[in-house]
Structure formats: structure tokens, C-alpha cells
Image (cartoon, rainbow, N blue to C red):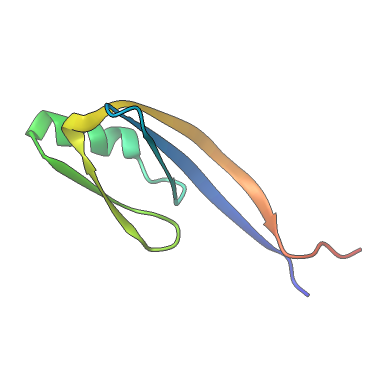
Length: 81
């Protein structure tokens, strides 16, 4: 079997309602810049697509904090010798 390596970036949004939403996005997806742009333009909802292709609508004014964990490598499948 061939080994597949998948890289993801995990993004966690702290919401003002004391809840968190954690989304894994593709590497290179600059959530910080997208969020800052949304705030400066007065955008109400920021849409983000995760690694599974699901879209998530984030109500910008409800975000209390954003924590961005750098991309990490994950081995997927069996590692043969």
C-alpha cells in the first residue's frame, strides 16, 4: 500500500457565547487575513471551506478570539517497512 501524507491547518474560533468552533483548512489558507478583511469591510458572515469541503458561516461580530495552529503533518494509512 502507498503512504499518503495529509497536511492540515486547524483553526479554532472562540465565540462570544463561550463556545468554540474548530475547523481544519488547507495549508496556505490565510484565515487571519480573511478575518481582518471581513472586519474592516463590515462583513457580517465569513464563509470558510474546511478540508472535507464543508462550508462554515462565521458571524464575524460573535468571534471573541481566533487561535491558529500551524500546519502539521499527519501520516494516513499503514507505514510499511
